Image (cartoon, rainbow, N blue to C red; front, side, top):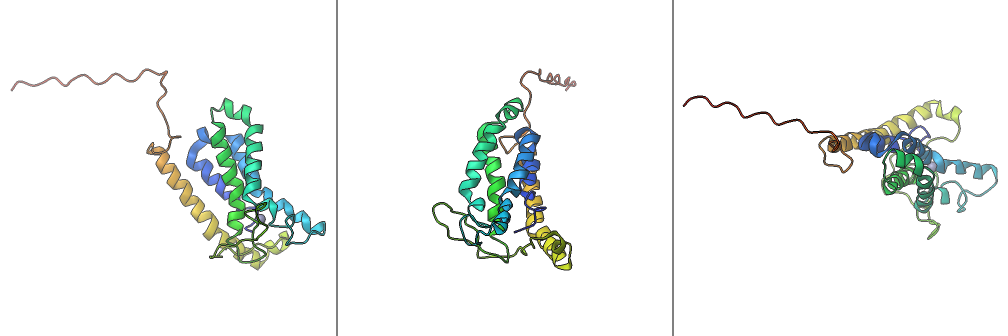
Length: 204
Ligand SMILES: [Zn+2]
């Protein structure tokens, strides 16, 4: 896995890109939590559940199906805050789904461990992308602080944070150019500025 420090890069990029009107603060926080949630499954090691089992690490918890269920529940739980912020429920679902689904999709780029059960419950097959470039993170904090840990963080800066920053900048640019449906809009309740009077014409 990328470290728990790097999975939030995706919801942060989407939050910055789409802006606070589309992604209000409670939704952004929920997205950050959702992006790290799948790795709670490391408890499976302590419970003696085999790595390769559906309930094991990188199993059902990393699937797109569970991401959809959690996103649905999360959007529903936040419905009052979303209504207050005038943020539509389907957009919040999409944001939470992308936040959590990105975890497994990023893990599939890592250089170690077993693959990801992305399509559970339809299949328990574990998947990797053909390109595995993100150095797999050690599970313990002490190893993360070692030299190997620094290599992992550098790899994540290159393959997670850099593309996420590019995504945020791209979305932000589109939003400022009003090319996204969430871009800044004129408030219809405010009168528009009067148009400047015609310039007086000089004598011919
Ligand atoms: Zn993971």
